[in-house]
Length: 77
Image (tube, rainbow, N blue to C red; front, side, top):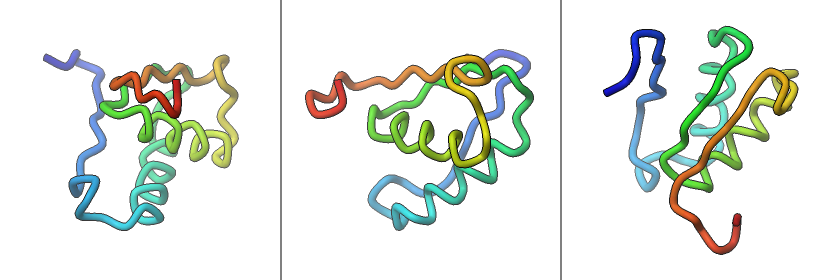
């Protein structure tokens, strides 16, 4: 269960949305998050995309944002 302060990013499945749209939704979602924040991403690829979006929004990693990606994808790990 997510904690009281959780703010999940919801939307299309990975195959149902263009990657650019997912990236733009991540950027918009980050704008409303308090700093510092910790994020769990269900896929390593999402974690990587989220880190890129965060940097473009001016977040400092790891000072402002910590990201944990799941999946142990060989390419990203």
